[in-house]
Image 1: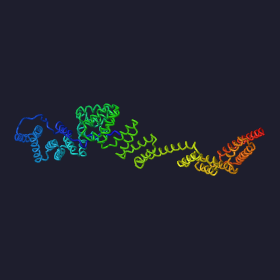
Image 2: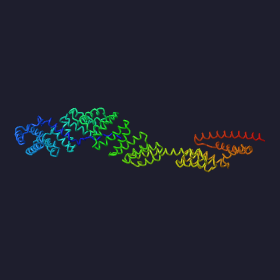
Image 3: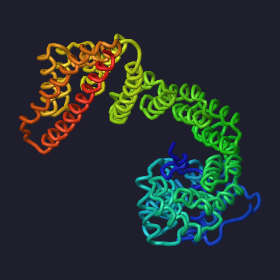
Image 4: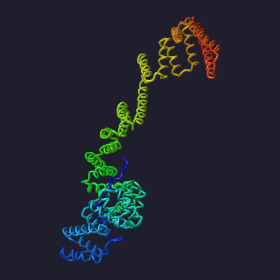
Length: 557
């Protein structure tokens, strides 16, 4: 199974701690933030007195007023904080063009949990201060919290243009590139973000993800360790740490990391699904086979993608040479997801290796008509059919080599049923016809051999001519030769001489035929020369036999 990047908090869904961080950044740096944020409560002054002081301060020094009111908000009780918000709301209505008021009010509303009102006030602040990185960043974070990443992204880009070392904006753009699988870009942005803000966990976490995705597991491992030291209850970070170890061949460390991911991701079904298979693979790689099988079985039961688990479990049994268990797992994989034709292909291969060719063909029929798998399935079907045919042919050839005439004939005819042009079958049936003296059948099979391309026209004509001489002789040459041997055995020398003379005449006629034969090709000329040579040798042997017969006859008078 291909290694897929696990789920992570995506750019478009970033909320929570990122927004709080933004508020902090907005207060610490920028053009319009207070000179010094309050660090502790200043006493128990009454709300009425505080309002009186605020009004006085606002009249004399707006900057001092907003610093004071932010201090009141930061150190106040929930009721006092609400009072501050109400005060700023009233002020913004009195002077809608007061960008600073909108800015502080937007931050306060955002810190209360984010809302449409917070967004509206921060937009008003950004209109008043369009070149302020801090105002733009607070607005972008609020847009992101309200699931408007398309509007937030251009603001982050503008911030980086205004402040190239703005760690928060660089982090957000890096996470966006990571979501879009633009790993080199993500790596560059997050590296810059880390230089600007080296202690921010979100930045370090994103950079670790980018290093892993960019094929730099060794660097990713070191950074994941730092990230997990800041918060060990991060199942995704543990999971990718495990994958980074896995790619380094450190299977024991990978297994430990996956165990941690499973431990801290118990309430996250997606994490449990992802890490379960990773853990099972790691356990198998460390030789804990029984544990690996149990982990696969547990994960499969709750996984949304059970097909992957069944396939990997099948492969595990496959590696262990447990064919039956492997086939069963591959079958369940295909039952869970009919797009997993690779499982069926493996089933077919396993059946084939066990010489269960019919079962293999039956399995392949399941995907022979499926678009993504039909080509491979049909190619394998052809291979197996050819293999099956060859096996059947071998069995039939064994039968044809022995047994009764009836058994041999049936075997040859079964071979022709497999392949009507089978040369061995046609030759075998022709020979059986010769042995029976059925010259019409001999002629038929000569013509079939020619039709199938096993005999050229000239070769077929030669065999048919020889057959014609036998027919003209009225008896089969093989019969004459058999009778000659019987007469010699019985000492009937006159009959033997007579039969040998018939055989000699037959050979002489054959020689005369070859002398008259006019071939039309070099092959034909070579055949003529060869046949004349063989026929002359045969005539010489027949003459020698004739002399031997005469001597035997004289000896036995």
